[in-house]
Length: 210
Image 1 (cartoon, one colour):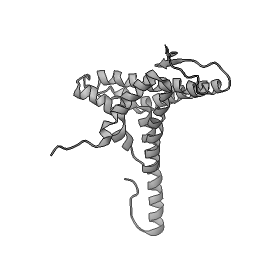
Image 2 (spheres, rainbow, N blue to C red):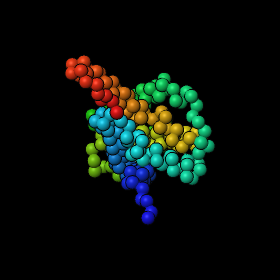
Image 3 (spheres, one colour):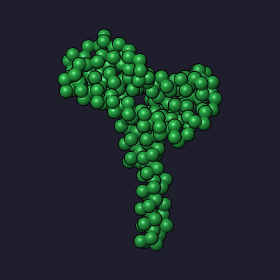
Image 4 (cartoon, rainbow, N blue to C red):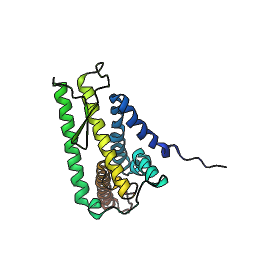
């Protein structure tokens, strides 16, 4: 009997569809919030990185392109890319740019002119004016343009590191991965603290960190 892969190993299809749908209608960019909220929810509730390890469609896509299709040099990423200062520094930079994107969205909601462009790598503005967004509030469309730019930029960075290093080298410094790891560490520290406190009060020895 042939062994079928679990459903979550096909989530790379979602990543591909997301980029394609955003090209034809930028409003589909809102679906990318799933990739932001679900990892945070899992790390907060379950205290682990199950999303990164099992459900990340982008990581699967890089593994597919770099591994099965041989588009990766498969070299070990440089030490600085794996260093704590770079990962957290990139997270701060990434979230700063995300905050500026939200501010631009706020300005459009407040009456500023809609900018029908997707910014790649935070520098290059790609015209995206062929999409009809007149049927939704301008602020809703502005968020879609900005968020699609964020997702496209992270995909391009991931593809670049995939080519020159191991397929999933993006996962080494992915902002979401860094955030969820920090949440898990804080949650485990809290659980350990509560476990030690409970042990002191009850005299039992149980570990709450899994």
